[in-house]
Length: 394
Ligand SMILES: Cc1cc2nc3c(=O)[nH]c(=O)nc-3n(C[C@H](O)[C@H](O)[C@H](O)COP(=O)(O)OP(=O)(O)OC[C@H]3O[C@@H](n4cnc5c(N)ncnc54)[C@H](O)[C@@H]3O)c2cc1C
Image (cartoon, rainbow, N blue to C red):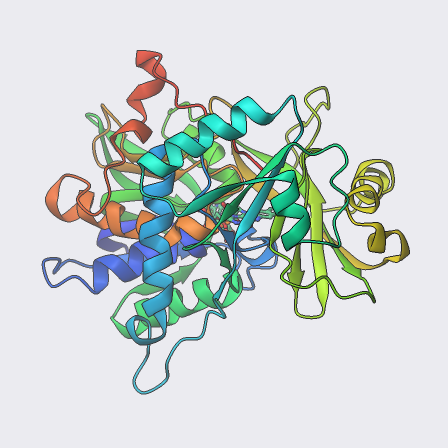
């Protein structure tokens, strides 16, 4: 089999991988060759195809606010930026706020997040219970002390269309998409020199980008790197409610349940409770227990009209879960300097794909992240004990 060689090899060709490929290929300062290696071109199991695709400013970590803010501005211009020939991309971006609800007990965290968000330039408003009642009369607020509403740069979009638009544009700019599963990584003197595919192909590379999503930890292990990213299963439910809920935002309930409109229906789900086992998982089998025991009761409590809802569909997907601090891990490995991470988004990755693609391209071209300051998200934070704990994980 003839050997191939590329300046940059990106493993994983969904949201993150295709954004990195696009940003590199579109940058006049980069003149090298790029290959994306993707084992499943149907993307049936890719998180980027199974996400709820919402984007927010309401984080407890300023670097997340910056990454998502940059990405929101990119999404607004994506029609033109990702157009191929005369065909504009359409990622279906809808600008609409997140509403984080807090009980009396959760109020100090809501207020402290609000301060962080304001200082980072996010457009957010703290609303009292009365203000919430006036704005969302369809909500039961008896156990709610306050809410934080996003007033700009938040909303949702079509994650599948976004990564396909990145992919199409990258291909039009000359990026090679190879179907195959990377099963080995060859290193020499603290440098990655090649990857081997399960079919026996060997592909030499000048740099390797880990964009393997929930499987990023498994990929890093092939180079002997310990990366705390594990696949964790989450369920999304599609529900039908006949009563309209005017102005419904993406609601993050004090119970941990969330819901947002999707056309005439709603998407809903919940994070595991603190005492749930939340084990590593490689299958996408559906289980309705969580819906029956926690999601539906929480929704029906918060919105009386949801007592009558019909659950009409559901799916499971895998979070690329960073078990150490639930935040992205970005940039080069401290010793194997040509192995780059773009991993560990823990449920907020599809919204950050534009900025993550840009900063990863910056590293490859300039040796530093330029578009957004993501220095807190380096891999070396684990050795230094400088974890960046994100409080708002959904
Ligand atoms: C249910 C659910 C809801 C979510 N909701 C949101 C949300 O509202 N907002 C948000 O921002 N994010 C959300 N996310 C998270 C988001 O979807 C992910 O963080 C993001 O899509 C990760 O993109 P990725 O390209 O890194 O991973 P993926 O989309 O999983 O792509 C990784 C690709 O790598 C390939 N691959 C893996 N290993 C190999 C290998 N060895 N060789 C070759 N190919 C390989 C896989 O086949 C896959 O196509 C959600 C996720 C889930 C599961």
